[in-house]
Image (cartoon, rainbow, N blue to C red; front, side, top):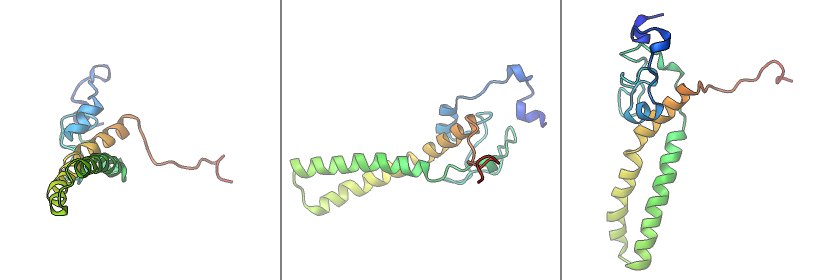
Amino acid sequence: MDERADHGLPAGQRSVPNPLAAGLRGRCPRCGEGHLFSGFLNVRPRCEVCGLDLAFIDSGDGPAFFVMSFSGFVVVAAALITEIMVQPPFWLHAVLWLPLILITTLAPLRPSKGLMIALQYRHKAEEGRFGPEDAS
């Protein structure tokens, strides 16, 4: 085993990073120090600090689903309240809500993907498989 992977500490003295903090900051789920992303949403092949192979990562559409659900609720509620109370012209709706849609979808997407990856690592989540007793 690579000594860097354990930060040179014995097994009982290793500190496990908080998955919430590591994920939201886009850090390695094992050491909490290395960068998780190489681009906006591209995951690095391995952690540059502890050497964790990040090939196991498959957050799927989970982050996008949660972000779109949150964004849709906020934007639709704000647009409906504005329409009922003020009744602005349609061009003003476009000016108000298009930037809000971009902000509420793009800003939380990377932290939510990092969080899902960190939680996946912490709970040892993996793809479901059929066992010999399930295959009939």
